[in-house]
Image (cartoon, rainbow, N blue to C red):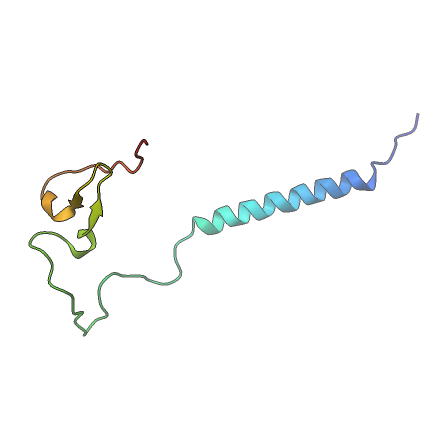
Length: 92
């Protein structure tokens, strides 16, 4: 018996799978790399950033109010220096 040559569709499928695997690997490696620019928090050297006055002891980013499921309002400022946990799913 003689060997049969694989069909072109099988070869094309293997090539497509290899290209897809290489693309996934390239994206994974690129996602794990270090950023090309330095992103530092704060203001550039030599300038002073103006900010609104914050409540005592609460960073501005953590100041918010939100409605409670059972009624009422939640204010983050009431939990200064106390641990808290958020439950974002509410049964209905």
